[in-house]
Length: 147
Image (cartoon, rainbow, N blue to C red):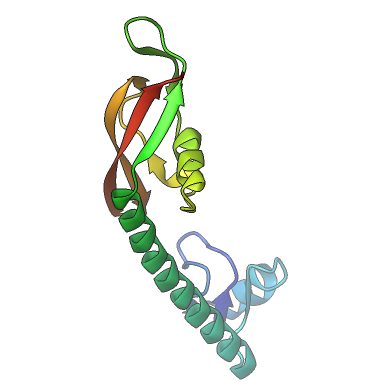
């Protein structure tokens, strides 16, 4: 029996896949537990529409990532923080701090996409990465002493 998986099923397939499974397994396990639906004409069209929507969303996200990465490279992000006499920070700069600084420049950045290699604990310029899946773009931030 052909079914459309509504969620990932071990050793069968991923969500959205159309797979052939034994009738008993489909009727007794997958369909009653809402792990799959029968691959009827209407359900197949619905699954194709969902897949097309996901693909379009993924392409839009990739374009947005490229735009945001370009904006971050051009912008000069400055983060002010309290320091000791040697220029060391009392608190490391976090991805949330970087996202907030980008927001002040009207650049919408998700803190979860900001990757700080080693903790930033000193004033000066530091290289940080913006990450989305396998795509990585680096940009520079400047940490200054609070006045």
